[in-house]
Image (cartoon, rainbow, N blue to C red; front, top):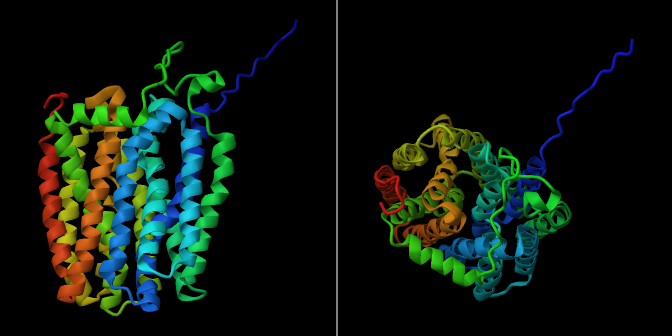
Length: 420
């Protein structure tokens, strides 16, 4: 008698490899996202530029980082993620590297603002939305949370290192480190990233067998991005999403990400210590964003947004008191809480764009993300000018907290239908 045993081995779906490459790419570009807060004081000391002037360069970066996103989403539909992301990483490396040669503030605007803004904007969160839309049906929310957390992981890795480099060898070494990190990721993206499951003979994870891929978009990328904007702008949901995300950007990248270190320095905290606290935000940001992605698959996304914005607003209103008291345990509690909430708003926002706008969801999210960066830009400049004219950041913290409470109400008012 012959006994045959068949061992069936389940192979890991290719979607997980694509997600891993996307994580590394976002991680590599995250270095320059971490540099503004670290380099503001060194640039001010070397060149004599005011915080308002340096914050203007940060604002240009943030605006382009956001406004590039919808066009990048359309370009990925037209030319593929691999090409767009590889070129974006090269642009980040060029912009970061050229900052070491600057001698005037307009060069800071060009290199730090324009070049890096365009590069990072081309592979921002719309890249996350595009990857999850194409490669995942099951676990979309969870993967969105993990990929969004890649930016926080990059902050966790780069912030302490850049702070030490800026204080030791100098800010130029820090900028070159970021340029090298971005360049190092390009080969991984070019050789390992694939644009669609069909390119390797499979379907999206969780898709029904034989699912037919949506035909590639042949429309001019700029025309498509503007057409989608015109359509979405006729809906109330778009303005609630965009308004809330603008406040999200103002309260994170624009305010805390840019000005927390200088504000802490005003109260006698050493910059490496303050940078370490922001790195702690990165640690808890990872956990908070992944958890938010998991919840977005199970809980009404607009309810999640309302809770996130409301809690963030309350935490910002107590921050000035924590700075004044300089009590380390209380500040650490704020950092942990704020880290859990930092970009937890992204997975439910992506989910709402997908549910309400269907196939145009990634491009719509690109425009919503653009509003995020416009809000961040206004906050970066506004907080810098507040510090220059009032001698303290307190007003900026209070205004941002109040706006977050407004964003909570706007999120809860989002309807389920496209026309609402």
